Amino acid sequence: MDSTIPKPWLTPEQQVEHLKGEGVKFEIVQGSDAVTYLRNNNNFFRINQFKKGFPRYSGGKNDGKFINLDF
Image 1: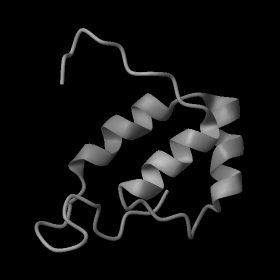
Image 2: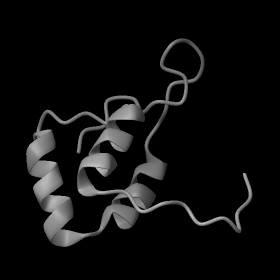
Image 3: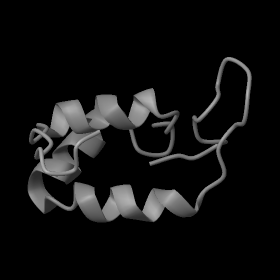
């Protein structure tokens, strides 16, 4: 991927879908509450950086997704 091409901005709804696609769960905080939080606090990039320290599955159908990570 060319790092000079900026990534498109995601709406709070798209941010939650993106996180779900990476295996982040929304059991403690519901997806709709996460959308509200992201809309009001606008710190998705900080949250996105924070998740890098959590383990991911290696191999299989969940390859690359987070192991038991909840928003």
